Image (cartoon, rainbow, N blue to C red):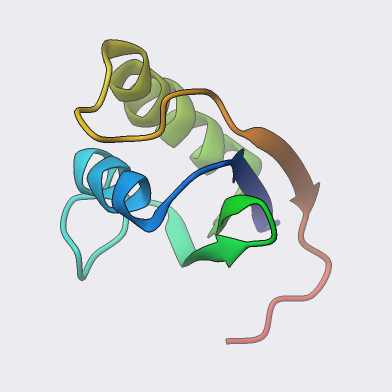
Length: 95
């Protein structure tokens, strides 16, 4: 079952997003293995990122193997604090 994750970065900016995504995605035109959807943009008080993975396990592999280690090491120009996270089992995914 697909698994969705919403990350909200209070005070986050487009520039921080661009630096962060460059550090955790393989390229601007491709997504990490198992990720099937990615969207991001400005929100009322910061920046929001939405990702959908093939499964919860796929999300956890990406989170634990790529996202968290790279964020913990520090990403020059990237987000400076962890996001507010909401995760959910996807009930309906239209492609």
